[in-house]
Image (cartoon, rainbow, N blue to C red; front, side, top):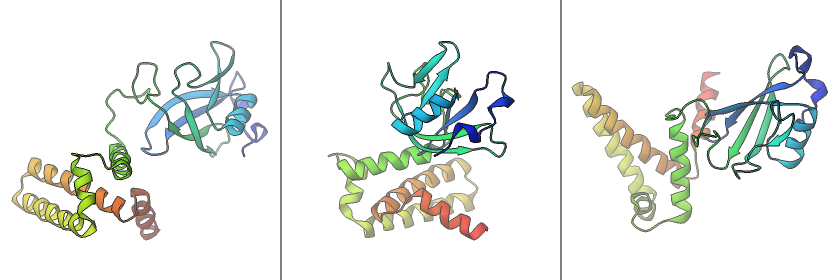
Length: 200
């Protein structure tokens, strides 16, 4: 629980604290807003992001009219205690234009995490006719075999110097690896933790 008194809002002329909103799943930066003490308290109490609107001069819960709420995951102060990073699970698009983020209309950054979410949903729903469903039906051994096949094809194209073909095969490799991770109860976050531990 972060208290507004811990933050240095005096650095800002209006006494508000800027808030960077980040998608917890894809890590995409979604928007920038501002909070006062009441907005911060309400956000933490209700679990949905509430801002202080400078134009309306009142509290404003994102999604209160559109239904596109930002469900709170975590709040972190920056090193100067004058900005907040708020990670969320967004419902629908964040931008008023209908885009997922206010900073890009065709975001590709973080798409692998979005794809991981789609694969996870396929695993839960198992829709008929889906290639991903067929992979899950075949089991871990067959999925692992596909990962091996795509890895070999990626290597062949890399050695041959075929950049476009290598990217195509590498994309197949990553997709099948994500399916394998899901089938074995793992995720990109688990890979990141392992790689980070090696980096340290």
